[in-house]
Length: 315
Ligand SMILES: Cc1cc2nc3c(=O)[nH]c(=O)nc-3n(C[C@H](O)[C@H](O)[C@H](O)COP(=O)(O)O)c2cc1C
Image (tube, rainbow, N blue to C red; front, side, top):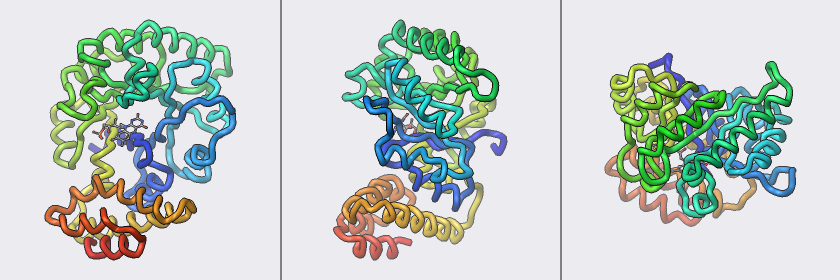
C-alpha cells in the first residue's frame, strides 16, 4: 500500500489551502493535492480567494495541482499560463463536475457529451503547448473524468480521445453525470481504463475507510494511484497508517484546531467561519457513532463559543 500514490481530491469550498496544510501538518503530506476548480474569467488577474489558493507561500512543501474548469482551449491556456507564472508545472482539467449549472454550459462532465469538441479542445491545447517552451518547463496536463453523461458505454470512445494526447495522468471517477453521487462506481470501466489508457490511471470513488482501501487494492493490485475525497474529509488520518484510539483523537483535535485557526485568520466573519466548519462536520461526524446529540449542538451553534463548547464535548 505504501507504494501506491495517494491524492486528496478537489472539493469546492472544502479542500482549501487551510485544509490541506492542516492535513499535511498533522498526518503527513499526501503525494498530491488538487485545488477546487478555477475558471478562466475576463480579467487576467486572480480574485482574492483564488490567489490565496495558489500562492506558493500558502502551499509550501506540498505538491499542489491547480484544477481548471472550462470547455474553451483559449481560456484554459491563458489561465494555465498565469498558473505557470506562479511556478505550477502541472494542471488538471475538470471533466467530472456533475452540477446542473456547470453541465448545462457543456463544462465538467457536460463536456463529455461532445466528444468531437473535446477532441478539438485537446488538439488546440497540445498544439499550443508544443509551440511553447519544451524541456522541464513544459506544462503537464492531467484529466479528472467521469465515464460519460448518461451511460458507462460512452467511456470507451472518450478513452480513445484521451489516448491521442500525452496526458500526465487520467483520474477516473467511474460514474456518469446522471449518477451524481448515487449508485456505485462501475469498476469494470475502471478495469478498462487500467488496461487501455495510455496515460497512468488514478482511481477515484467511494473509498471511505481503511478497510475499503485495502479491499479495493486487493481487487485491483495494479493500481498505482488513488484519490480520495469524502473518505479523507470524514477521517483526515485515513491514509496515515495504524493509530490507537487515543492517538487518533489527539491528532484530530490538533487538526481541527489548525483548520479553525486557519479560517479565523481569513477575516471572513464568525458566521462564515462557522459555515465552513459545519460543512466539514457533515462528513466528520460519521467517525463519531452515537454522538447525535452533540452533532445537533454543532449544527445549531450560532457563535464560535457555542461551537467550540460542543466540539470540546465531542473530542
Ligand atoms: C462538495 C464536493 C465538492 C467537489 N468539488 C470538486 C471540484 O471542485 N473539482 C472536482 O474535480 N471534483 C469535485 N468534487 C468531486 C470529488 O473530487 C470526487 O471526485 C468525488 O467526491 C468522488 O470521490 P470520493 O468518493 O472519494 O469522495 C466534489 C465533490 C463534493 C462532494
